Image 1 (cartoon, rainbow, N blue to C red):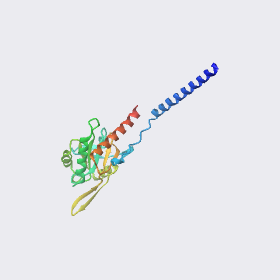
Image 2: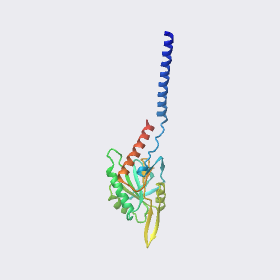
Image 3: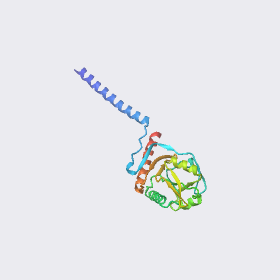
Image 4: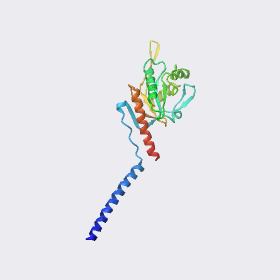
Length: 221
C-alpha cells in the first residue's frame, strides 16, 4: 500500500514537473522568436500603419536654409511630411496649422517630431520663400524644394501625387492632402488621411510610437 502511494505521488510529481517544463519552454520560445507585434488598427483616426515601413525614393533636394538634403538626412527623428506649396490658398495653410496644433498637444515625454513641407511648386518655392513660410509655424517646420521630377518621385514614395494646371494664366497645383509619418529610419511608417483633427493626430502619433518602441525593445532584448 505504501509502495503504491509512493508510486502515485512520484507520478503526480513527474507530471507537475513536465507541465512546468512545457510552460517555461513555451515562454522561452516565444521570447526567443521575437515575432513583431502587428501594426495597430487606427482606422478610427483616419490612419493606416504599415506592418513593414516603406523605404522612400532616393533624393537630393534643398531645404529652406539652402542646405542639401538627402534621404539619409531624415534619419534620427520622427517626421510628419506633407506635399503642398506656399501659394496654396486653403488646404496647405489649414494642414500646417493642424500640424502646429498637434505639436502643441504632444506630451513632453514623447519624442518631438519635425514637420516637412515637400514643395509641389519648386518654380516659385525658393528656399527663401520656404523659410519665410515655415518659420511662421515654428522652428520644427521645414521645407524641401528642387528638381520637379525628384520632388514628384519623393511625393510618390510618400503615397502622394501632384498635378500642375493653368487657369486663366495662373498656375494651380492639385495635390494629395494626407500626412505621411516617417520613422527615425527615414521610412514611411503611416499615412494619415484628412480630415485632420489635431487631437487625433497626437493620439495616432503616440500609439504608433509606442508600438514601434515595443517592437524595437523586443528585438533588442
